[in-house]
Length: 97
Image (cartoon, one colour):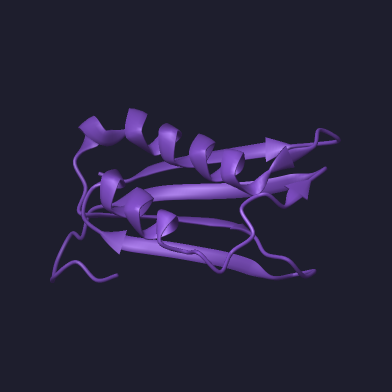
């Protein structure tokens, strides 16, 4: 089964790290559903830029991948932002990142 979790802040300043934490915590709560990979999408630094992170494995693997992204400014704040995270289960074939 797949799980989807989204987070939207509107006219409330929130930093990118908090947004990523909220999204991965949301996925963690869906972990019982069975899946083989996880990912999330959050706003980048420029208009229409989206940062996408995906990883084969559990939410912990996705969190580790995000923590390794040292070039990203995780303290950047957004007054309005929409982020989405998902878990997926490959119904046929091998899981792919």
